[in-house]
Length: 208
Image 1 (cartoon, rainbow, N blue to C red):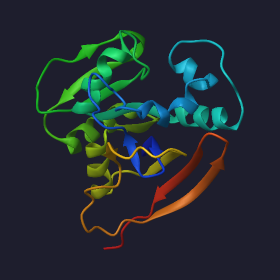
Image 2 (cartoon, helix red, strand yellow):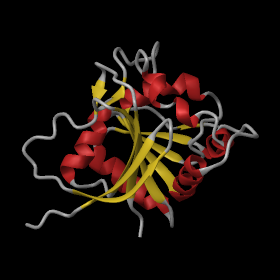
Image 3 (cartoon, rainbow, N blue to C red):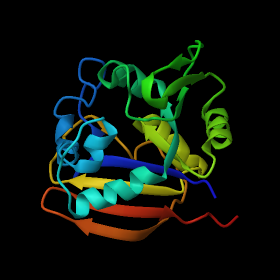
Image 4 (cartoon, one colour):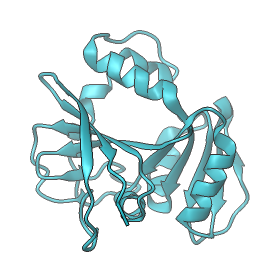
């Protein structure tokens, strides 16, 4: 059964992007520190079309996660900040449904990525992603606002946090603006390495 999953780097103080994130600073100022552990891994480099890289437990965890991925849902802000860095052959290799208020034609890129712009809201984007998923899972790519909407709505089945031992001291926090919902997660895996601690969480359905 297709699930909705998200994988996010996070600072010790709960930020998933540094201050002033935007086209000039796609990860926010200093935000690259939240992701530096992944750049040299074999599985990540393969996604970018680059050979080589390091193996080990971090790489095995990431490779298993990547193998699950099908369509992507992302917010307009993340698309705007990432479109240029991702280039003509983005790393998604799947349909990407961008939640936006700005209607435009789909954009086809090399390597299997097509950006579809969904103006009817995140529920519609999720519906379209489910139709395209086949036997793969749906990746919620962010940013923080969209992730919060999915968490509030109970649409996110699994969350992988990569907690990096830095303090961002500003930027975009993942767990802000969740209202008064009683949200519970079941911890299914913890993998610790010198640079990062991986925490895998599954949502516990709310009993109505």
